[in-house]
Amino acid sequence: MTRLVIFCTLLLVGQSLAIKKSRVRKFPDNFIFGASTAAYQIEGGWNDDGKGLSIWDVATHMEPSPIIDASTGDVAADSYHLYKRDVEMMKELGLHFYRFSVSWTRILPNGFSNQINQAGLDYYNRLIDEMLKNNIMPFLTIYHWDLPHKLQQLGGWANPNIVDWFTNYAKVLFDNFGDRVKMWITINEPKQICYEGYGSTSKAPMLNYTGVAEYLCSKNVLLAHANVYKLYDEKYRETQNGSIGISISCTWMHPVSDSYDDHQAALDARQFDWGQYAHPIFSKDGDYPKELKLNIGLKSAEQGYRKSRLPLLSTKEVALIHGSSDFFGVNTYTTKLAYRDPSVDGMYPIPSYMDDMSAILIKDDSWPQAQSTWLQEVPWGFYNLLIDIKRRYNNPKVYITENGWSTSGGLVDEDRVRYYRNYLNALLDAVENGCNIKGYTAWSLMDNFEWMRGYTERFGLYEVDFSSPQRTRTPRMSALVYKEIIRTNTLDPTYEPENDIAL
Ligand code: PNW
Image (cartoon, rainbow, N blue to C red; front, side):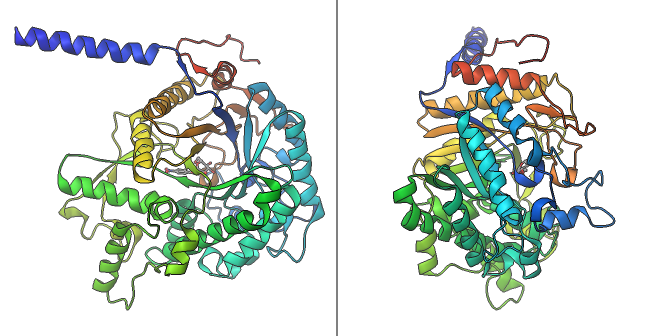
């Protein structure tokens, strides 16, 4: 009898979940949809019209090449020449906004603002004007990883002078584009810049100086961001009336078990991964999370350093950074499992970011796997992340500024369709539970240069034929599904686009 009751209850619960999943759900009124790209990944024109060299130009031209297919972004999707087609695609999709980034060295060839390259300004003016003509709101990222090589030679993000360099660069953008651009991201993904670029070899400049360099970078990125926020707030907001924030990549880290240690490992992993950047800006009191200060401080002392390898923030710096964002730009793709056990000792180099974090991160092989090894589909992790951000940072205004799925190519991208639907479904659950989410951005509008993975991993709603001189762009099935989601402002899991993939 009891078994029967349990069975029936399970059946009912299962059914109601299935009903919930299959029903047509509406997005809030005023919810906005967009798609994202980044300058180095799509533009090409790497040395056209006076552009200077960035760290990615240098990295991709190294011999032997550190890029898996030895490719470069020299031409990429050639958006430097094909921007009109890009805007046409935005229009086809019905996007409300387009998130793109500006190449620092296209505007300031040597990184400094003493010399401004008019041809660079002209390019972005043309792009912005074309978008506005088509009713698409420009959402501009000031920095998406293509640091001027000249500034890297001076230490790049590890040199505190970058706060001034970055601020001067941002000022040029506010002065030239701020009359038309009302949505700004200062910096894309501090963790990837600092840890992957300075603490490892997985992004330019491949400094590989973990345990030290990524923390110097972290402080300077936060200060540079906050200084630019302050500049906008004090000098531009009144006349230009826009919003400015930061995009932080956030991976949900889930404990493998209910044990205290595993919970602590997952929490530490979250604080290292994104709390490091989010806590100083969005938490009630600001400053680095205590887990970060404690772990790095203790390890540094044990290892004989005179001070923590994490440079602390002064009271003035804490105050400058605290609250320096009009919204939280969340870039999120996946979830990892975290645990801690004695095997963690000696597992990682000393000193290192991973040793400081002291968590072991693993994948669950039962989760659907994308072409990128690091990317698996875990919609409930996305939901947990959004609820955690709401709870931890007093329900900030959130834009999802990146979310997407990689394949090896092909127009019938059913797994990407499933990923977008399931993630948007989780987003709606979070909205129903009170999360203040204002918009969503698909990564990416089109296939592009996927950093160290070259052209072997495709994230586009549009496929790009990199072997054709025209870099022909063709909509995938996911483009048609996304278009319908935007057109109807609803998620309809039964919608099937026409078979011939044409808009
Ligand atoms: C983002 N993670 O990077 C970047 O902003 C894009 O330029 C890039 O093309 C895109 O994702 C796809 O790789 C991230 O695992 C990649 O947490 C991975 C993670 C975060 C950010």
